Length: 70
Image 1 (tube, rainbow, N blue to C red):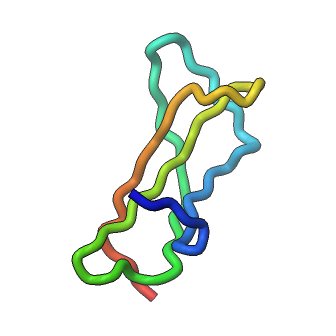
Image 2: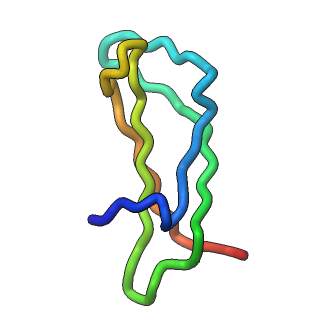
Image 3: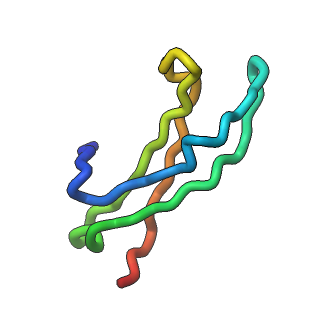
């Protein structure tokens, strides 16, 4: 797997705090921007980390980008 900002970005509204209890989950809206379509035979994936007030990673969300439109 290869991560590069040059391929695009997954962004979320980081001004909205999310309160979660132990073992809880939530949905978070995100915007996905791909710089170009993936080369033939390849796929794009994106990842977002949910961090607490101290910056410790508390969860991870992933997205598979199936189609890029201009």
